[in-house]
Image 1 (spheres, one colour):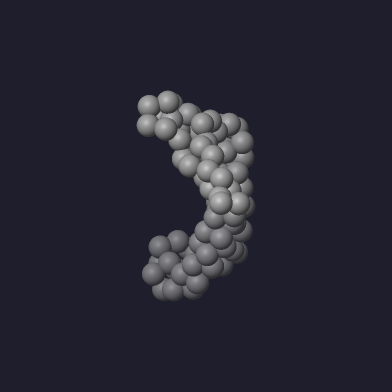
Image 2: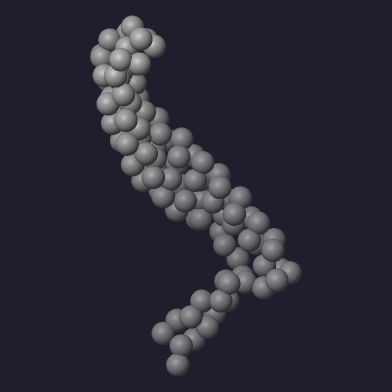
Length: 103
């Protein structure tokens, strides 16, 4: 028979760290895809007409996207995780917690 337990509190910092790692991974994936997209589009005539900076500029922006996106996503994940834990801790008093089943 499985044992059921209820989550009555989530540590905000703990959930924030986990969400930050998820955000970092998602940001890395988004950054790589964004950089690839940016580099592919830099060779189109529309982008050449838009900015006369050369391919070196576009490569630099592509690398910058790979660096900045994971940091931004991780920060958003950290803040969102902390807020979600605080909201959960407030709501659990009124509606009860999430029930987990253990074997």
